[in-house]
Image 1 (cartoon, one colour):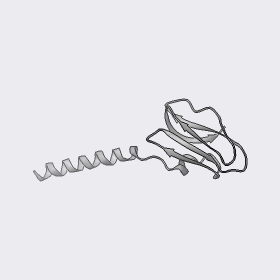
Image 2 (image 1 turned 90 degrees about the vertical axis):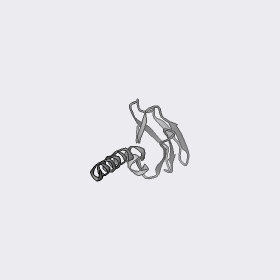
Image 3 (image 1 turned 90 degrees about the horizontal axis):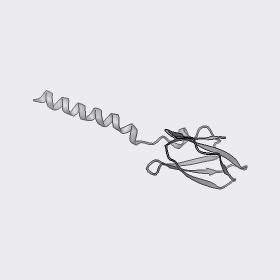
Image 4 (image 1 turned 45 degrees about the vertical axis):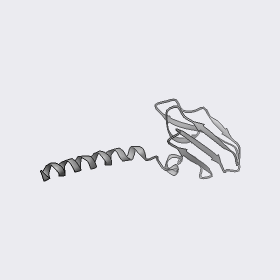
Length: 97
């Protein structure tokens, strides 16, 4: 009986451990590494959206990389302004275009 209980507990823990990484979003620094440090992205995984803020001194053009969908059009963001983007696919990162 103890072996069955131990096996059941181990199987439950394995399912939880495998399922956990899927629920955690990537940190913004890893997902935004293709752009300058003055460009920040605030990710909203539950809304499948990102808010991109341009803290740079010049206007930038960025694109949102989506998995299972086409990437976004080029988005122009002026200095000290932000842009909220809601995706269709799974949002992965932002990059210059």
